[in-house]
Length: 137
Image 1 (tube, rainbow, N blue to C red):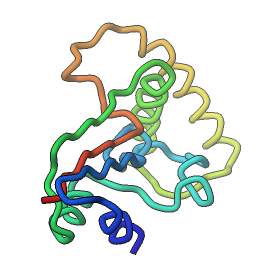
Image 2: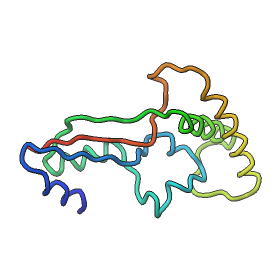
Image 3: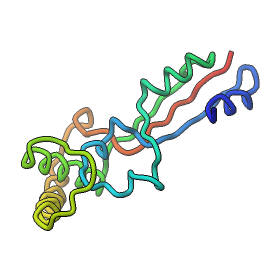
Image 4: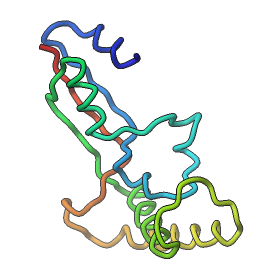
């Protein structure tokens, strides 16, 4: 309903710009990610889901930007990826056992060193934000 109301506010040949948390970004592999649980983020979005909404409401994609993980985001990505490997895959929800917290802290610390390794831009993981510019006919 919110999206439909936004589309109603756009004039013909106008643009609707939406920026949302990117479900395909590095935060999706992070366990115990308190900032991505309500009330901070109540939903996650993908480019596919935004394009579906656009198509269903008569809009077309004019531009898209997916930021790349940088600095602390990149360190968190590496830490989360290492944690996932050591734990045998991504697990949703919050694990509050002292050993889980200690392992995550260790992996986060190692991620801070890993972010210092130069990497080609194409290999840098997606960051936290997804922005689309949609056009109304």
